[in-house]
Image (cartoon, rainbow, N blue to C red):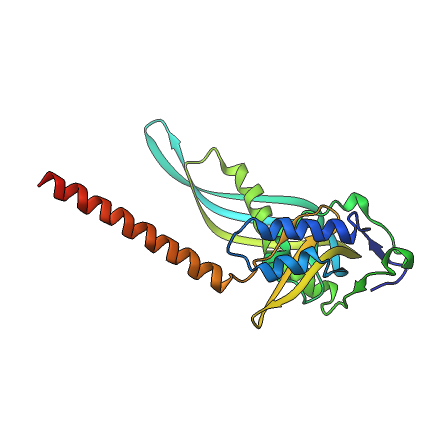
Length: 245
């Protein structure tokens, strides 16, 4: 992936800044394990470049619908056909398998205006994960979202009708532009009682995603405190009711 055709987004955060950000993120939930907080505070983070593709494409969408329209006090059915060319740009799809797509969506957006030509000096201190998907395979992962966006746009042209029923729908890919890119992420990778914990931080924006395992001791303590408070409240209610008797 690290060839002359690859673009790269440089890291905007240092290891120290990433550690502090992870520690703050973990400390927001009191049930997160202290061990994971300490791992972040001690700087057990690493910079990683994740391979991805940036796509730009043009799609022609054809729609045939049965619509109803109102004339005076009556409704009539008509067949309506539409054709729309839609242009999309700046679409990202991971080409590796180290980050879940749902998790990746929480780390977006990346500012692609920050793309630079690949320079080994920018990536010398970071791991570069290998791509496992071709451009065609990666595009197919996001194609349903693109086509749905095109459908949403073409159906806006039917707003003057009172109802719409799709009879025929087709999409044709007219053009596809592809760029190999490397996306910067800081990764906190540790364990808690045998459970893996991986948190990710967008190396350009500082956005963090991932859910640490819950601390067993803190959860038990919280439940115990809740039960104790409930018992006290119950006792007070019983005493109040007894007084009324």
